[in-house]
Length: 63
Image (cartoon, rainbow, N blue to C red; front, side, top):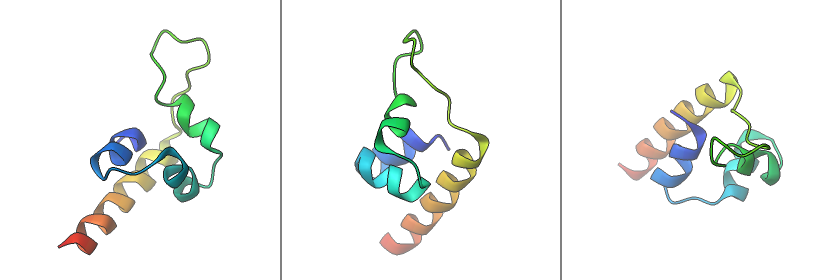
């Protein structure tokens, strides 16, 4: 799961996602930029794995 999808799925903020990933809010916001933006960055593979684990944890809490 893409970290930005996780944030939108669970209605969380960029700041919350940054804290979960251990990064700055600015670094996380770069993942959501338009693909043509010069300062857009792709998240590292670790962010995808961590987002999947966080998603499972949040789903278990809501159930």
